[in-house]
Every structure is written in structure tokens, then in C-alpha cells.
Amino acid sequence: MAHDTILVVDDDAIVIHLLHAVLATSYQFFSAKSAPEALDLIQQGLKPDLILSDLMMPGMTGFELCAQLKENEHTKDIPIIFVTALSHSAQEEEGFKVGAADYITKPIRPELLMARVKLHLELKSYRDSLSSLVESRTNELIDSRKALLARSTELRYLFETMGELLESRDHYTSEHAVRVAEISVRIGRALQLDSKALEVLELGCLVHDIGKVAIPDDVLLKPGRFDKQDRQIMEWHPLIGAHFFAKRFEDERLSSIILQHHERLDGSGYPHQAKSHEIDELAKIVMVADVYEALIARRPYKHPLSPADALEFLYKDAAQGKVLTSIVQTLEQVTADWNPLSIKIDFTADYMTALEQFRCKTYFREPLSDFYNYRYLSSLDRVGGLCKTSDHYHLLMADFNELKELNRKIGYTKADIILDEIGHTFHNILENALQQYSLPVNALMLLRRGSDYLIYSESRSEIITQISADCQKVLSEAHDKWGIKATLHTTKFRKGQSVNDALEEIYSHQTSEEAACIQ
Image (tube, rainbow, N blue to C red; front, side):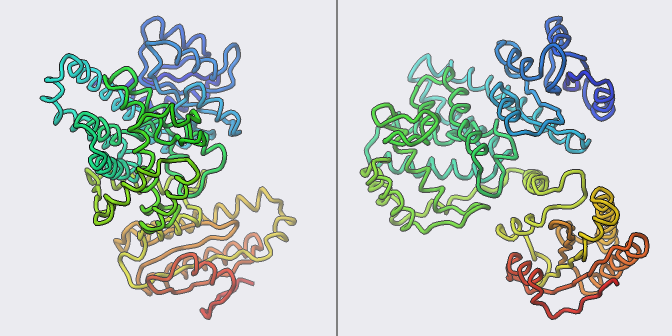
């Protein structure tokens, strides 16, 4: 079976050598030392499935290369990942504007590089297949109304497949789409829409967020609230999704649903700040259904509203001229004895669950380390991902005392290196314990909060005692070698006590557990 082809564009021979060492065993590997050389290779017949490009290169920048490739009909669909030491938001924004699929910052972590490359190659394969399928099916459907009716079931399966494609990136969005489709169709029936309009309404809802397949993971999967740049990037998804369908589906109302489901009648929505007379009538239904589901559903970054509170929110929007009061009233009628949250989408395969967990872990993983930001615990706690094997959990905290004094004594850089070494040793202790006692992965986790280390454990008391002793030994050796003063706290909490409350207790020293101090 032929391997996918990757083209690396970088003026640094060392970077090319590194990328070759990581990728060449799994993919066909080609390289160019400049953007013009890369363009020449493509003109001569090279058909890369993915391009990894530096940003700052002599003659032509990575931005210029990306822009030129995206303007060409034959190369516009090649995903381009920038591999760069630059990390300024302005550069990232410029890259996404010219069509980049992702960023990987230097220094390069091989496992992250392989994961990102694999993900974008899979997405390209899905998009290519999807484009081919949609085009072939819709061209047939345009020929006659009879063909449309005969293939309506097949078409629905196709759109459900596209929903599963989105699920592979974001399970919440996939489930949201199915619920919004059902809410919208029920409203449409109550408003006595014809069968054709109901079909377009349902299909449009199933793919109304399909543009999110192109949104970077750091934005799409962010468990907290968006900053200004995050929101700007996310607001591109209606444009991206509508572009997928604008020339591939006979009924323009479908692409209008995708494009306009975040618009508002008073012009306060996005992406075009369209006003009432510019917005499709079906999209006016979807914008209400979309908000209602988002308000009543649980998300990692928010608590759900009750149906009554969600309706009150929408009636306020209607009073302000953002949505139609008549549609909100119809929504209230169709949900009076039906809860959209009764619709649940299970992962289509076991590996999807693993992928979802991996993405969450990757988001919280500290750069260039083996441990995670302490907020990862809060994220898992919110979705019920903790205390699955025990009725209690422990938190061990390595508190580094007088760190400022150590920084003054040996310098900040060396102190950071020492702390990293301690963290890596802690990580090895936990990895050995996981293997020795055959524990589930989440039963032991190493996390970091500032300069302190946290260990979360659901394991038995004797295992905690051994881990605590091993970590204490590491801290003792660090004290003898570098004069680092540290305290190791071990605190037990009952299942159901939130991690946030537990952390607050630890850091306010409201604990009666014994503490072993390294003097």
C-alpha cells in the first residue's frame, strides 16, 4: 500500500534531517530548501498529501508559499502545517488567514509531530472522500425530483457520515448537530413547512457545524472560555462549512443554513452581520434551535441551563430583535413534553473514546515535559472522569520552599532545570507503579501548578505509602545535592469532593494530614 507523501520546506538542513528521521519510515519524504524550490517540485509533478513549511525563509516566506498554493486549483486542498519557532498571535492569525491547517512550534516533539501529521492526513482523506461523494451524489440528485426522492435515504446516510467525520474531531459538536436537527424539524413541522423544506432543514442542521473540521484543536477543543483571537478563529467555521457545499448542493438553502446559523436579525451575529431580510427563513429556525441546545447541554466549560431558563434567554433575545418571537414560541410548544437531551450519540468505535481522551490530555500537557497542568484534574472532574475505581482519592503535593532564595543562589535557569529533573523522576516513579500494580492510566497522574508538583491517585493506601516514600527520597537527594527545601503533603479526600475544593484546602493549608519536611 502506497504511503502518503510529505513535502518539507525549510532552509535549515538540520531541521530537514530531523523531520526525515521522524517521518521517513512512515511516509514518502521529499524536501526543499526554499519556497521556490518547493513550487518547482510541485510543477514538475510532485503531488504531496501534506506540506510542513518553515515561516521565515529567504526569497519567499512560508506565508507567501501557502497563499500561492491555496490560490491554485490543483494545490488548494493540500494541508499546510507551519513548523516554526515563532509563536506570536499575529503570525498565527496571518497563517490561518492564508489557509494554514495548523502550527507546530520548535523545538519539535516527535510524538506530537507524528500525531498532528497523522490527524491532518486523515482529515484530508476524509475531505477528499467527502467532496467526491457529495459531488457525485448531488450531481445525480440535480437531474430530477424523482432521483432526489429515490436517494433520500442514501443522502441522509451520507450526511450522517459527515456528522461522524465531525465526531472524529469533536464529540460534543456531533451530538449537538443531531439534536439541533431534531429540534429544527419539529419546529418546521409545527410551522407546516413542506417535505422538501423539512428535508433541507434536517440535512442542513446535520452539517451546520461541519466547518469546524478545519478549526485547530487548540481552539476547537479548548475547555475554557475563548479569548479574542480564539473567538475570531471559531467564527470562521460557518464560512468554511458553507464553502464546502456552495457549489455541490442544488438547494441553496442548505448552504445558507450553514453560513447563517450564527447570524441575528438585528445584524449582531456573524460572520457577515446579516440582517433579517438577508437571512434565509430556514436559517431563522436553526439559529433558535442552535442556541437552545447549546444552553441546555452540558459542556466542559459551562453548566447547563434549565429548559425554562433557556427559553427565558431566547425570549429576551426576541424582545431585542435578535430572533423571531414566533419561532421561540413554537420551540416552547414542541419541547413542552420532549427533552432534546434524550438524544445521545455514542462513540462509533472504541478508538474514538481513546482519541477524545488523548486530545484532552494533549491540551493540558506541559510543553516539553511528561506532566500536565493541574487544570487537567478540574476538566476530568467536570465530566465525571475521576474516582472511577475507588471511593476516595489522594493528592500529594511537593511544595518547594524558599524557591526565591534558590533562584538567587544558583540562577533561575538552573533552578528550572533541577525542578524539571525532579518532575521527570516523579513521572518515572508513577509509570513504574502503574506497571507494577496494573493500575488504570488515570489512577496515577503527575501534574504541575507553578513550581509545585501534584500527584493524583485513586490507588490503595499501601501504594500511596510507597509512592510517597519514593518521592520523599527524591526530595531528600535534591536537598543534599542542591540545597532545595521542599515539603511533601499527602491528603485523602472522599469521592464526590470536587478537585477544586481539594486544591483549595491543600493550598490554604487547611489539612490535618502529617507533613514531612526536608530541612
